[in-house]
Length: 323
Image (tube, rainbow, N blue to C red; front, top):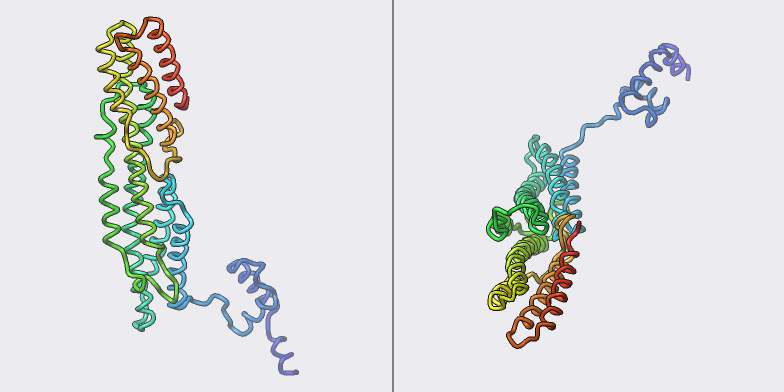
C-alpha cells in the first residue's frame, strides 16, 4: 500500500487532468469517465483499437446486406424507386470498394469473404447500370407526357419512335447474364445480394410499363387529329369524310396497355394507365355515336342530338387530364 501511495505522490495531478481532458476531446467526452481517463494515462491503455481484417470485411458485408434488404422491401416496378436505389447502391459500392482496396492477409477464410464481396460488387455495378438506364427512360417518358396531353406546342416527334426503351432492355439483358450463384455471394452465412430473379422480373415489368405508357401517348395523339377532323366533317354534313376519319380514330384507340402497374403515374401532369384506358373508352363511345349517326338514313334531329352527346363525351375525356 505504501508503494502505491508513493506512486500516486510522484504523479503530477494537473498533468493527469490535462490528459483526461484531451482524451475526452478526442473520443467524444461523455463516453470516457475520469476513472477510465486516469487508468489510460497511468497504465498506457488505448481505447482506440485498430479494426481487424475480419472487422473490415464485416463492415463491407453489412453494407451489401443492407442494400439487399432495401431491394427486397422496395417496389422495384415503381419507376420512382430507381433514383433512390441508385443512390444507395452507389454509396455502398464506394464504401465497399474502399475496403477492398486495402491489404488483407492471405488466409483461406479471409480470401473466401473477399471473393464473395468482389462478386457481389460486380452484380451491384451491373444493377446500377440498369437502374441508370431506367431512370433516364423515366425522365424522357414523363417529360414528354404533358406536351402530348396538352398539345401546348406542335410536337416534332412521335412518342413511339422518340421514346426508345431499347437501352433499358439491353441493360436488363446484361443483368440477367451477370446473375451469380448463391454460393458466390454468400459470406459468413450472409447473402450479399437480393433475390436476383425477383429484381430481374421487376425491372422487366417496369420496362413493359414504360412501353405501355409510350403506346398510350401515341394513341392519344393518333386519335386526336382524326376525331377533330371527323367532328368537323360531320358538322358540315360531309358524312363520308366523317366516317373515314372516325374509323381511323377507332383504330388508333385500341392500344395494348393492359398489365401490371396500371396505377403508376409518371408525371404530376400525366395519367395512369387506368386513366388512359378510361379516356380511350370515352373517346371510343363518342366516335361510335357519330359513326352510327352519320349513316344516310338517320334523320337530321337525331344527327344533331348525336353530335351534342358525342361532344359531351369528348369533354369528359378531356377533363380527365390534370390541369
